Length: 155
Image (cartoon, rainbow, N blue to C red; front, top):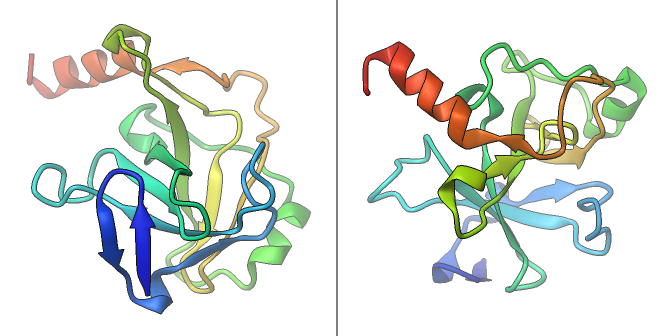
């Protein structure tokens, strides 16, 4: 399938890589088909990726694995909300959070409150509001990344 992407131009994606978000994204409920794109030359898929709609070229959101941002991230999700994603395999769920990237890098944030939960066995996903009261919609990433780098000895 040829996907017209916002940042990468036309990208040829195998049909079995398309993720269906059963309820769309919060604020974008009409769009349910997405792929995950990343700049392989720079990130190798282990940092910021893009959740690109296959239905709307201009709908692409930066996403990241929340464990790269917040150690021990564990959203509390009602099991009933996960049922539409199908039987979970031994790999469990794949979790992403959306990012907000303003001009000032010190203001970059991610939405820990509403993670995107994907079942890799079925490629069905959903953005679900976590019950954790301490997870913010705009969790500052800059400070977290600096602390993780310092802990790893990269600063």
